[in-house]
Length: 285
Image (cartoon, rainbow, N blue to C red; front, side):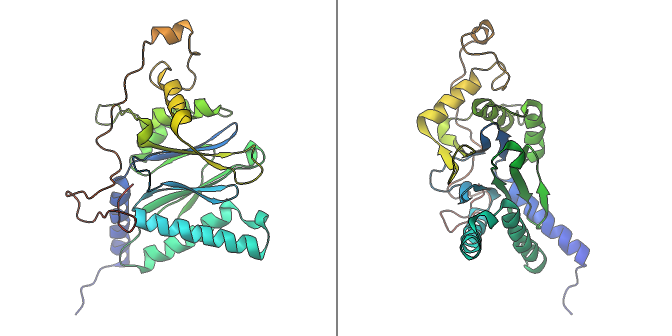
């Protein structure tokens, strides 16, 4: 006789397995600002991206196993291209892509022996701030509409609580980045994480662009944003005093960047047998 497991227990075990895999990675943050949507993810790899473009005004961010969410990203790009070609480019929406992902992940979760260890966000920038859309899709195919901001993956609850303290509507790009960096740097195990530019992946959906609004922020501009965030009192508060003011001067020079030992892995981890490497592996990012 085959060993029997009740459906409830089987679903519970699958959910626990997926949550543990997702929690091994680092949290990502997606939030609105006055000029569009900002995406920030700790990622020291320059080849394995957590954040990517899907279509003209739509972007994708993910955490978990790289090979699994990369397959989802490619499928989303194909879905968007075919829909835009068969109908109209305006018919391609973040909501449609989110529902497409939810359907696939839900089927995998219920029918596959192993659920996919992924959590993704699909964001679309509108012509006005009230037209922005942010959707979070979990490993079991659940979809939630996230107004304003969302933190997902890793210690998402802790990061989301820290982000809620700093987020406000109508922030500038530098203020939004400072809020995101402060939330991602929230003290864990009694220690605060400091990120260097090489340890972050940052991208925006820029509302002012008419076509292909996705743009990555790298090099000098990213260094400038990090310096502005660290010059704020308390580390990276978005409502800080302007640089050069007495309050700013009193805060003293910012601390040097210290690489994090718990950043996303880009090579084999001997402590976990189910992690892979490279583009075909299962590296949790």
